[in-house]
Image 1 (cartoon, rainbow, N blue to C red):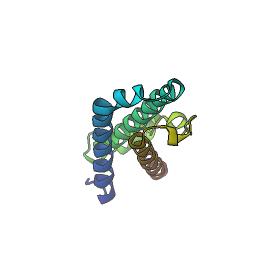
Image 2: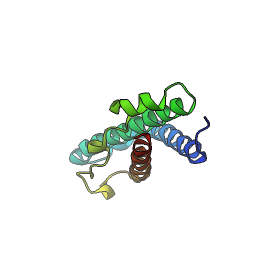
Image 3: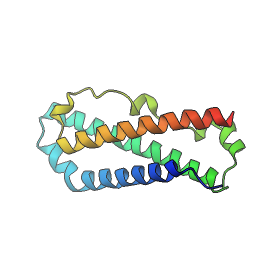
Image 4: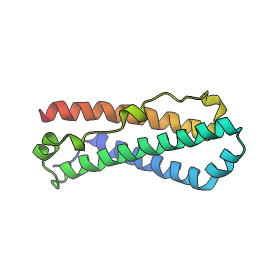
Length: 133
């Protein structure tokens, strides 16, 4: 069964955002964190971990959905196992404990975009779970 059109776009968006975050953290993250005040640098670390958690949970959920659509995982297997659901909401949707304006602008942008995408995928997860019965 082919996935709905929105799925492919959402998957591509999540994968692109994951790669963008990887490149940012690899190329600029450490340097930018050294330029921050000590207390803000600690929050920088927390927020980069939150970003990574969001992206990891989103990609895991999207890969499970792709497996269902490609017949590698049945709808019943998905429905009967809550571990296939989108995880990490308590971390991924938590508000930053620092004024986001103190964070590097690019990191703040990645955080905002990843939170919006996570929220969209959380709604999809709820819809898919309701549909699965």
